[in-house]
Image (cartoon, rainbow, N blue to C red; front, side):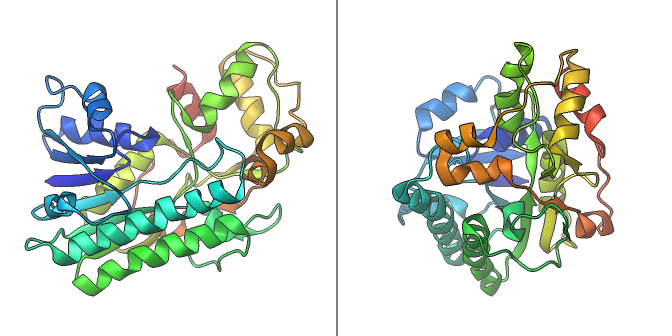
Length: 307
């Protein structure tokens, strides 16, 4: 199998590259920073990885590299919760996803040897936020900014179906891993005995272990029966208060000092909604497809991540 990946140096992309390298699959890393990617993935350790420079919003020679790949995994997109949401940054969040996806679809359509599948990331932000509702893959979309971004992102990917290439959309929840993501931001205050729930603590966290995200993506690449939308979330979402309590137990630290909403709002502005609001998302279609989670509940997941 030969897989082209955008976002290969990101939080999920790194783990996907490492997993595929262990299966002797060939990997094509499409990146804006080839030198940085090669430092991260040295040729001595990743002999089957090829690094290709690309401009994600521009057509170019990089698109020719898509031809002959078995599949394409699109994980590209500007970070959601790392910057204050100015008007310019909101445009960056949207365009870094939609324009990149459009160029990938364009490349697949033009490829003499078309990839069999495009696995395109999306997010559970598609559903909007709620403390009371439960969402699955059949639920309607929300109407807030992140929901609109996800709708546009997925619409850009839908164009690939006209080429005959199978499309799988993975709506990612909060991904738990040891070296980044939301958990990476939460760990420091806990380690300093200053951890606690963020905001009210009542908001739902639809989480997933990074290993399960990678396994689901690989399943989507290999299993031709999978197509359409799948929630990349564990089957047991938890409220923020529970997540923080379990995190404290796992690392033997108290969970007693809440992070007030206004502090995050001062720091992130409108972007604070990413952590202050939430949604209870269930992977109904993912389970129906027979996917077997290694980490269906949060405590074993955190124990594994923080071992």
